[in-house]
Length: 221
Length: 101
Image 1: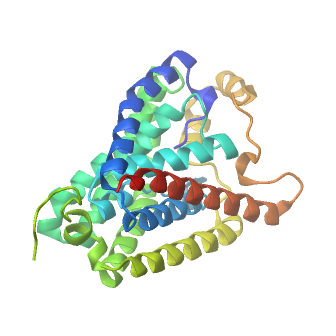
Image 2: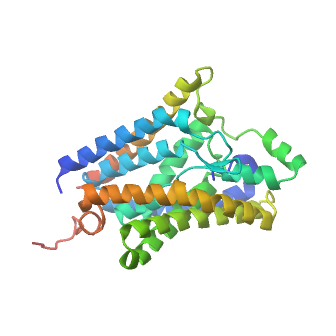
Image 3: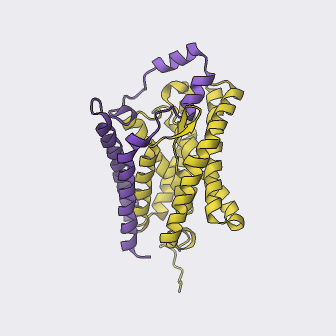
C-alpha cells in the first residue's frame, strides 16, 4: 500500500504531509512521556520485526501480493495507537529513503494511511471487541479492519489524485486488502499477540501500559 | 516485570527479525502488491506508462530491497541492513526520550 511519488501530484502530497505532521509530533510526545528503559527494547524489537516482515510479501491470488503493516500490533502491545504511529513513521522513513518503497513526497500520505488510520482503527476496534470476544479474536478483527479501512482511504486518495477512477479503485483496493488483511494482518497480529500473552502477559495491557507513570506520585502495593 | 526479561524479548525480537530478513528474499511473492495490482488493472495504459516513466523524487541506495549485482544475497543483506537501521533508530530515539529520568 506504499504510494510511490508518481501516484500523486506534489500539491496533494504536501497536504497529506501537513495532516500527518501533528500525528507524528504527538507520537513523539507519547514517546517522551511513556518510553522508559523497560519499554524501549520492546519498541525497538517490534519496529525491527515489522520492517523485516513488511519485506515478505504474501501471495493472495489474482496475481497480487500483500504484506503486514503492523501499526495495530504495536498499538495493542503498548496500549496506545500513538506507539503504532511512531513505529510506522520510523519504518516508512527507512523504507522510503533507503529502499524506494513508497515515495518521499507521498510519505505523509503513507504515514497517515498505514500509521495513523490502521493504528487507530486497529487499536480501538480491538479495545471495543476484547471484552466480548477475547484477546485473540479482537486483535485479529482490529488488525484486519485497520488494514481494510486504510486501503479504502488509500483508494479515495488515489481518486482525488486523479490516478484511480473512484468505484473501480474502491473495488480493487477493497478486494485485495480484504484478503491481505485476513492473512497478512489479522492472522499474524493475532498469533504474535497470543504468543506475547502466553510468554509475557505482563507486556500486554494492565501491567505494561497501565502502569502508573513514573512521574506520578501514586503509591501502590 | 524485570528489565532482564525485556532484554530477552529484545534479543528474541531481533533474532526473529533477522531470520525474516534471511527468508524474505526466498519466500516473498514477486507479484505486485495490492496498490500496484489495482493500478495495473484500472489505470488506462497511457497514464500508466506515464506513471511508470516517472522516477522517484529521491533515488534510494538499495531500490526494491536489493543491492545491484548481488542477487539473493544482496537482498538478504539489504533487508538485514534495513532491519538493523530501524533497530538503531528506535533505540536511539528511545535513549533520547527516556533520558529525562
